[in-house]
Length: 380
Image 1 (spheres, rainbow, N blue to C red):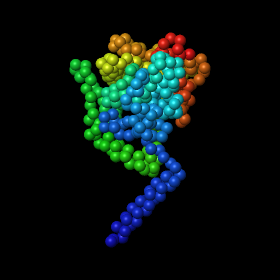
Image 2 (cartoon, one colour):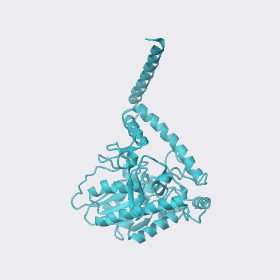
Image 3 (cartoon, helix red, strand yellow):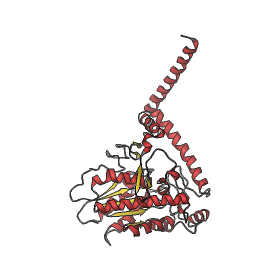
Image 4 (cartoon, rainbow, N blue to C red):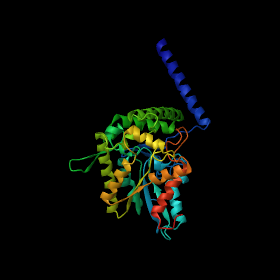
């Protein structure tokens, strides 16, 4: 064996021992940052099952559930993204969980117990939510379907051009206006690399630490990119593209809006086929519900519009055209925040009054949803 070969073997051995000791050390100190999401060949990713205090055995951000509906139970299935998933608060503090308690405490459906099932997954746009509905939700036999829609990024996430991602499915509109599903992401190298990486990260504490650092750096870069793209430096939120408020929308955004409208309308059609009412609940951004009215006014001026109402107006018109209920939760939460001078959004590591819903925000969402769903006078 040559000196060069011996040196290379020595270096390789030293690196291996260092990595092995680091892995053992992280396990001994109890470090565990196993990702809550895992690769999914249909939707790009999904929630991993049986994550302590996070997910149930069915991969839902929910308590233990059965697929078969208990006799006499009224089931509400809720779709959404991270705003509905609510990993920033405890499981029983998410608005689907609070809504379930309020409906049961007030006997809103007579003697029928109510279950509010949370199918939301972080990062999902309407396309992935629709695939979840098709392939997972209907098996639970829901009596009511609700979509927690977050305009801050749901519209953007439905457009391949605006999202700029190669590891998730997209729909497009054919010449006849019908939705066409494209799942070619499964053959893309980036999805295969992500799948391999996810399997390594799931079992290696050292890889989990590296992934945690990568995620934090990516979040910082994304925050900067979002603000620059909307020319509203200092007003943007992480993960929110303020061009959703533009009226009229730029061409790429108009196409994204058309896709979004078609997907929501198709959800409603599927619900009608199953004899299930469909409700669209609009969840506002932190800026829209900020307790200081000067903040949303400043963003509106930066975007070049009078106010931030365009997404709500467009979604309300969509509901009227397709005969489904649209619940504007932005307005009542904004009034509540102003009245109490309290931010209903906020989380560790984010700017004040930004990011996901706080415990108080989830509670307020549940209160207004319960008031809508419960017969008059039942919910205080």
